[in-house]
Image 1 (cartoon, one colour):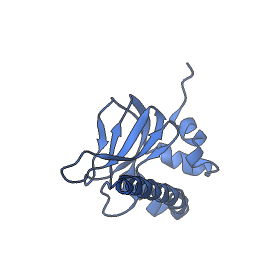
Image 2 (cartoon, one colour; image 1 turned 180 degrees about the vertical axis):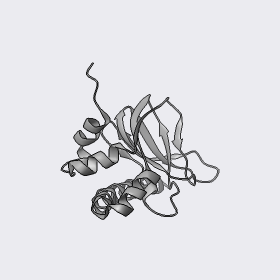
Image 3 (cartoon, helix red, strand yellow; image 1 turned 120 degrees about the vertical axis):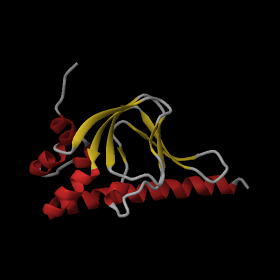
Image 4 (cartoon, helix red, strand yellow; image 1 turned 90 degrees about the vertical axis):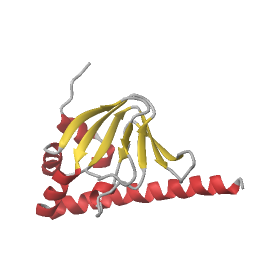
Length: 154
């Protein structure tokens, strides 16, 4: 089994394709490896949002919890996908729940660290904002489709 550096893992991730190598170096300074066991919540709606995750292995469900009902899965993320965008937008609180469906390995990027780096490097900030805008749009589309499906049955 080949051991890869965080820098290589981040640089090779599709989300960061064509990102300036200097920006990759800034990201690495905010990165760490994490693991989540099946069923463990990675974060819950309303909690402080200070990370995002590059899913390396496993599966994560993105959920909403209506009052007095079971959680509704609005999206399921797999290897190679990005989890979490709330770290980027004030008030930096999670808007969804995220739960490991399978044993999951990821790279966690510290949002506070990245916000500071984006403040001092506007080019990095703009690049991340463009890329995360696509994630936000995708999550909203997935939520809309799930809600349409849920309420179409009634």
